Length: 357
Image (cartoon, rainbow, N blue to C red; front, side, top):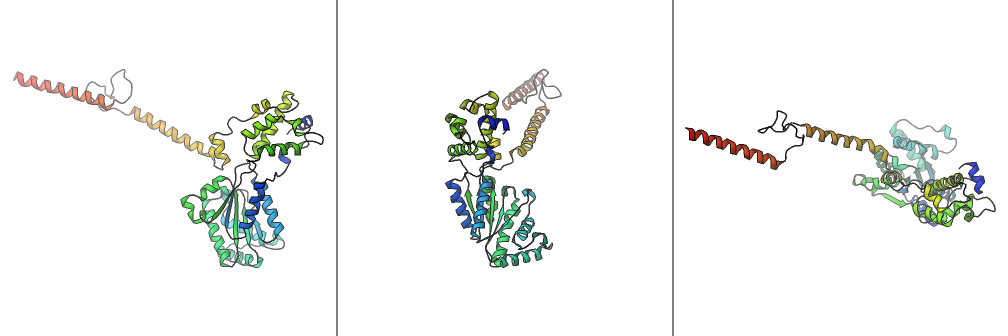
C-alpha cells in the first residue's frame, strides 16, 4: 500500500504485515497435528492458496519446539517439483546432526547413506518428524518413497512421521487408487483458514492496522465489510482487496471506503473455473496449450473430412460434387435415392433393348 494512502486514512501499516489471526479451528488443528506426528504417521494438512498455511506451519513448529518431545527436520528446497527422496534425506542429516551443520558429511553411496541415517535417528532417542511445505508439487514416486523411509526408521526402533503441507490437490492425489500404497496410510486434515471468521478477520485487520485514536468504523462502512466477507473466502483475498479498496478510495477522494468502492475493485472472475483450479493447486494455465492443440487438431480433422472426395455417382463432377454445390457430404437418404434412380434408368434401358430385338 502506498504511504500516501496510509497517511490519508490513518493506517499505521499495510494489511499483509499484521501477522497471524488465530482462530479456534487453527488452535485445535495445531494440537491435533502435534499429537499425530508422535505416532509414526504420514500426515497431510491441505488448504487453499492464501488460506494461511504458512502461519499454521509456524504455529506447529513453535509448539513442537516448546514441547521438546520430538526431533524436527524440515526441507528447505524451493523447487519441490525436482525434490527427490535423497534430497529429503539430506535435509534430515542437516537437522538431526548435532553441532555445526557446516561439518555435516553425507555419504554419496545410497546403502551407506541410509544406514548412517538410521543410526543418526536412533541416537536422537526421540520420535522424528520430517516437514515438507508445498508438498502438492512433489512427484508421486517421492510420495511413495516416504513409506520406505518410515519403514527404515521403524526397523531401527525409531518413530518417524512425515508432515506434508500443501494445496487440496495433494489430498486428492493421495486418494487416487494408484496411490493406495501410501494414501491409505495417511492422516489428512483440512485447514479452512478464516472462511468461518471472515467478518471478524476484516475487523481485526482494520483495528490492527489503524493508528492510535482511529476506529475501524472510521475507515470502512459496515456494508463494505459485509460485501467483502460475502464475496471473498481466503485471508489473502481479503488482504489484497482491502488494499485495492483503500487505494481506489484515495484516488476518488473519499474519506472512507464504501460498498460502492468495494464493488468497483472486486474481481469479476474470482470464482471462475481457472482461478478455482489454481486455488486448489492445479496448474490450469499449463493445461491451456494442450487443450488448444486438441481443439486445433479437431478443427483440422473436420476440415480434412470436408475436403475428402465424395463417392462418384451419376451426374457428378470428377471431384464428387455437382457444379455450384457445397462440399457437404450427401446424406444416406440422398445417396439411396440417387442409387435407386440410377437402377431404374438402367432397367428401362435394358427393357428397350429387349423390345427392339
